[in-house]
Image (tube, rainbow, N blue to C red):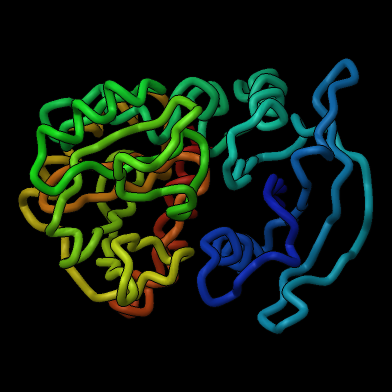
Length: 300
């Protein structure tokens, strides 16, 4: 029987109608895998990487899970580790990736912890300048103002470490900025949606369009975005083909990319979501496809 460790946020925070990790856990259980759950601060290194964790049974009820046992485990005895902790990618997160590096040659870690540490999912798009909107990364108000003045519709400001649309806003001269941020040309066609495409080993397996709620331009589901059925277009496939070698080479098996107006805006690699919305729109089960791939990887 295979053993799977999920490193994630508190199970009590799970939204069973939206959470992708929840689907992965249910799918593992349907395959009779043993499921272990750990917070990031449950990891510790003592000769080998270990975890204070719960061995659990998943429930399709409001209780979400049943605790079977509380235990200390050696992580290298797991078959699979899903690193699904949401940002911010802070020092605790980075330290966890260093510890996971010690077992990644013995255990299949999704995604590669070295890549989770090395590639900021907001900044990694800088490697693909030909398919992203004009972008600068700076803490200089002068540079931001000069950059914003180049575009009739101005720019959108994004933090480098958050997720779910948190901290994103359109820039105006009155705003103060103290930290290093991403300034990106505002794309007016965001009103038509922000497409999330889920990639498995660099290949698109599903997509959903996200429409911002009234009065907002932020389409993320965490910010109230509304899902709308869509398809993967040829332009989308071209973008996927462009970034696939990078994802495959770096062991980023499961990713979610965001596309606005045929331009790549983000490559999400920490804990990509959207699977539940895609499943409902298409009567699909992407979690089965993902676990099939992972089990095949285990076979070598």
